[in-house]
Image 1 (spheres, rainbow, N blue to C red):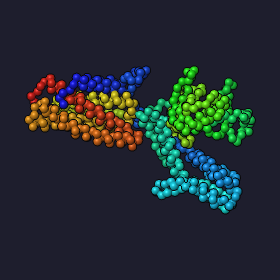
Image 2 (cartoon, one colour):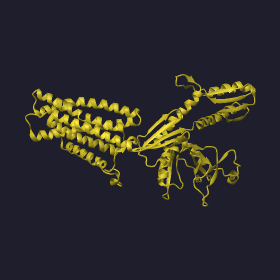
Image 3 (cartoon, rainbow, N blue to C red):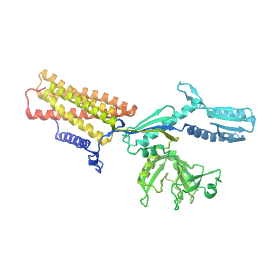
Image 4 (cartoon, rainbow, N blue to C red):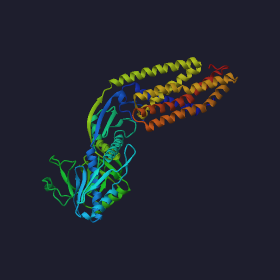
Length: 537
């Protein structure tokens, strides 16, 4: 433990120097380091909503649209049952929050009722833990059927939808995983969203509110767009606007078939890139099922146009030159680079299962954050002062060496938070204050062990070697158990709790390095230089 190789000394010196260099930008204005290439010192710690302000949004999920979409899906399934049973029917549609139809052959009422009931008996669980059906089927002897969602089924469907939207919003807003937005469900169909440091809330709302539902349809080339604009839209087609306007500057429309050839749910990747003529495009890739459907569609429709529809708008309608069998392709259009990046992110995150509306929008000013930062600084300085004084009074010169290592520890924490661009919140400051005290904990264990070995009559070199060696197991055990708790807080916590876990984890790792490596280096250098007969501890 008192033998440190030359390369170890160099490594310790380099790490400490990098910690100081990468923490320095936090003491300057951001404009000083604008344009600095990635990888070089220039990044600053990102402050959370409670420290620097940001955007506070309250969203509401269109629950009626969710239920309507679900009932529309069930309409297709019921149609399949009736066709299989060769039962004549009429009026199959969604009306009054239920799927209704009339069976023209009353003798088949019982059989159809049993078959439909068995198909939609999902067995969901209510909050009380009881099993319940999601959909209820009623039928009269005359053949009038009604398929309606139960109250338990409605609540379960909305809850699933809200949780899915929360997951998608997390990916859209925080793709790198370091921004630490707060995304929480409020009530039955509302979502609270707080994002720190947002400079353009309108751009954030545009990214959030876009449903990003992409589908592929064949263009209806057998019917006239002009007739469709007059209201004569074929029942198997739909009239949609195009993203690009014509030469006259007027919006263009196109007829596309209602049948979805490939859905966006089969997308596995989407990336912003550049096309053959260096124009911004979005490249995409399907999963195996989507690749097979896309290949079949392009093979069967060579020299026809394929419409790419995003949120009921045709963003591109290229001509199919040949079969595309690789399961990948590109989306072209008059995109800017930023638009391709945003579109690729939305497609990777997935489509929102339902539209959202903004009920409340509030900008959180940095005034409260300044008070929190000042309070955090005061708490940190007070804690640091007590630790420094205690170490010097208790362990003399060794305490001074540990205090010097503590400053390197603070520099390393600041540098890592800056490089990782982890968001620092008020609980994160609490984590840093906690690690200031814990940073010298390992040194206390080592110094107490050295003091005990000295009392037992060991020589200075032997006491230091034995102290470090015997205290190491306890130090590792204590830090690993705390690190496990921090990892669990990060894994299962949300928002500020994650911020506390991040700073605590970083502080544990840096304190282990400074206590075991930096302080030991100082002690060994002092020991080799002075060769004392008595240890000042």
